[in-house]
Length: 121
Image (cartoon, one colour):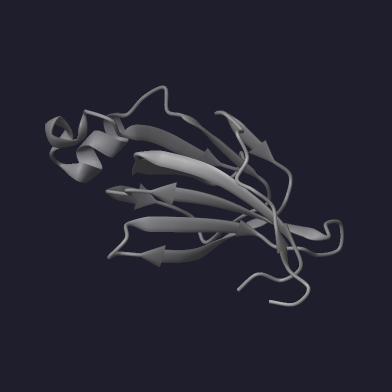
């Protein structure tokens, strides 16, 4: 696609603290992949995707003024939401997603950050 340059996925580690305003961008049930996107705009010429894979549960706001993703200190809400915490203990991460106003969570196996220039669809 012309005008788009995707940068390699970063080796960023948790916690993530990203300044872009983010929105819930896509979820694929068949691939269990969730994308939160920080779009280019007034203050940013690049997009940032936070990509969660092997997602088995989530509770999210539709948008965040900025985005922090960290390992949850207390997973009790996630355990109650999934109703079977024993089945996902191995290899899954309980992540808190927040902008200090809205709090949510994602239970997944992997999270990665993609950055690029232009308007990625």
